[in-house]
Amino acid sequence: MSISATAETQAQAGRRPDTLKNGAIQILLLINAFIMVYPLVVMVLSSFKTNAEIFTSPFALPASFSLANVDKVLAETNFVRYLANSVGVTSAAVLLILVFSTMAAYAIARYEFRFSSLVLMFFLSGMTVPLKLAIIPLFIQLDTLHLIDTYAGLVLVYVAMGIPSAIFIMTGFLRSLPREMEESARIDGASEWKVMTAIMLPLARPALVIVAIQNAVPIWNDFFFPLILINSDDHKTLPQGLTVFMGEFTTNWGVLFTGLSLAALPITLLYLVLSRQFIAGITQGAVK
Image (tube, rainbow, N blue to C red; front, side, top):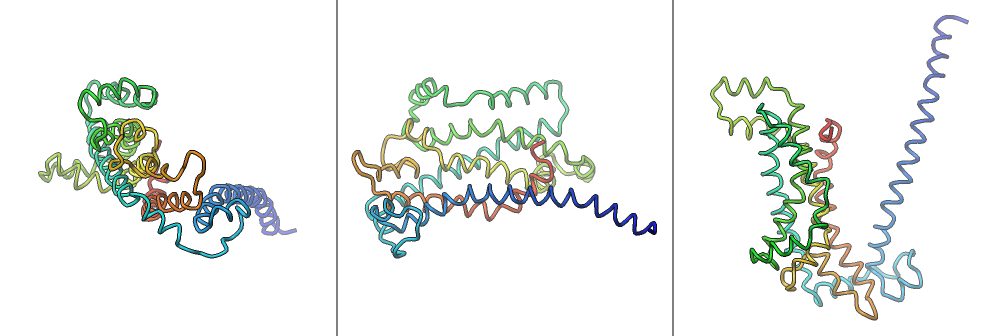
């Protein structure tokens, strides 16, 4: 047997375990994708069904793709109002989280000062204790500030929840960026604000997208804090507002599934639009 044939045989033998490993990984990913997507498919299909269809054939296709449940959602509830409230609260909270966490992370990552590590640990300590454990003193404090049943009180709570993890992600990403570009900009006479906004932030766009998605999804889906802090129907967000379909004795499941499907649509579209930047941020080590 020639040397080239022997080398080819060894290469094929080395590739065989890798092929089996990759195949097993692909199978596991497909199973995981099925487990994650199938409940969503059932939810969407159930939104076209009546209560009788849901109980008799919960996993079958609907008899007809009627929009009667959509009409009930829009006509019998303040769904549009709940949707606008969720969009406003989520957008305001994510925007404030991005602004404050970026400025704090930039100072910690790009400037050298004596207590930088201590300041970072102070922010990271906010990730160790869930804010829900402090709901009683938090409620008392917001009530003293007259922020109960207001958008501002809800947004401030979400900002306080999101800033620690956002600073952690942004600091790790900004520390990985080379210093040569910002030093060149300073030599050319650029101000510190210009260096941050025109040079560093465009490079940190994948990390900003990660922070935005990581905070937008739980804020959009949150039910606990609106339940505690919001009283009036006009200020309710979608998760809290959709509970009107759950009666004490009966529940219109078709209409409820329709509301849930419509509520999941905006955040799903947001992820699809930003998915490329999200994946880029992960592969570049933004969460090291």
